[in-house]
Amino acid sequence: MIKVEDLTKYYGNLCAVDHISFEIRKGEILGLLGPNGAGKSTTLRILTCFFQPTSGNVSVKDYNIYDHPLEIKGLIGYLPETAPLYHEMLVYDYLRYVADVRGFPKEKQLPRIKEISSLCGLQDVMHRSVNELSRGYKQRVGIGHAMLSDPEILVLDEPTAGLDPNQIVEIRNIIKEIGKEKTIILSTHILSEAEATCDRVLIINKGKIVADGSTESLKEESDSAYDIHLSLQGVEYKEVEQAFSSVTGIRKVSRGEDMDHTVNLVLSCSAGEDIRSDLYQIIKQKDWSLLEFHRESRTLENLFRELTKEG
Amino acid sequence: MRGVRQVFKRDFKVYFLSPIAYIVISIFLILSGWFFFSTFFLFNQAEMRSFFSLLPILFAFIVPAVTMRLFSEELNTGSYELLLTLPVSVRDVVIGKFAAAVAFVGLMLVPTLSYGICISFYGDLDWGPVVGGYVGAVLLGAAFASVGLFASSLTRNQIIAFIIGMSVCFVLTLIDKMLFFLPESAVGVFQFLGADFHFQNISRGILDSRDIVYFLSVCFVALYGTYLVIQEKK
Image 1 (cartoon, each protein chain N blue to C red):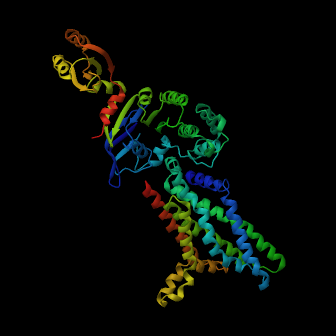
Image 2: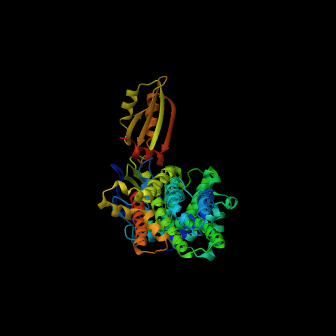
Image 3: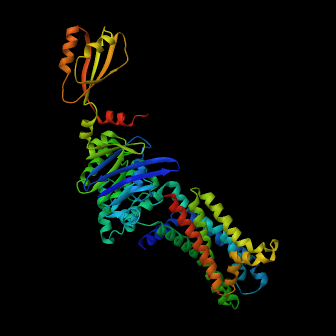
């Protein structure tokens, strides 16, 4: 459906997007994740033909962004980051205007606007001007704007920014619902959102793709499958390290802060083996006092931090 | 074409959603009416010459005020991102906005038709130069609107856009009044660049193709410049 090839964008000397390539299939919900300034918005702006790339190519269906920008814009419904709507227009007039520009048939406009307004919860604000609206309502009008002409592809730049928790759940449900038939690309820095809504995530850092796959497969692919957190009292760190060196399946031992003769450890373990009983046997044998012992599975958050850490 | 029509429709409508249209039209009518009629009865002649000779200098102020918001405001609020990701091309946007500004200037001139009608009751008004004057006024308005639109595309600050637009229009209006500073060989060139020079030709009732070409080429150059500036922002 969408094919991005070797896309690069420079702002002056600053490289915002650095030779990235990926493909999106029809009906997929793709999440773009990344820290601030990673190049998410820039990528989306190139997809929607708002920016021209420095080099590389994007094609949507059979069109490419250099030769057929109008056709691509017609296929895509886009919500920019801050939903910069025309502030002096009424919400109804605004939606009507968008329908007109997109060439939506006149006789279908009114029912469609009604449908959108109930889908996005806009009934109460239809006849208010955009600059009177709160942040959350503006965002909802923006989402309505993107979906209005029932486009095949939706590009949403941080769709849930500025919404309250109830609305966030509503919007996620809407995204999932329309994602059954449409192709959706959304960017976010909220990881739980990506986990909840997306079929597939792309993690971008400093303009490069650092991970690509479904949330489950990404978690599995990461170096270690789970962490074991341990707190032991009345023992030296060296002693513990030595004792555990015989256990296979520990990838990394990281030491937390020692407090009141307590040793805190985080053991990163590889997937497949459960080494908890081995560890417990050692602890029992040495007769250390055990304060804390729990297992934590790797979350997308850990992975994200690992992949996008500075330096 | 749909893009041009929709951009035109919206921008023209928006003039009347904010007080700017009413303020600009009022100021224009008050100034033109007062300057025109304060000396009209002294000359005791049934003609609108002095009204048309006023127009270039008035337009140099008023038209950039009409066009200053067209791009600056969109750049400032970021709404041009939404506009340019709708299925319209940059060319459609530029032409649509230009057409909206010209239509607004045209609308501003409509009430002044009553001057001509009033005068025709008092004396025998020669309508030829009046018709020529209005044709010229629309051409002049279009040329200044394109210059103002170009100024507006340069900055996200409306006041700066207004000042740039006004300065350029002012220079175009006054350039043929400064000719005595110049060597004789350059006089012809600079005279040809003056908007006032061409406008006064038309408002005498002489529709010369050279004058029309002048106004159309000012429009073309300024609109093409606007197109390049917006394209460059991508």
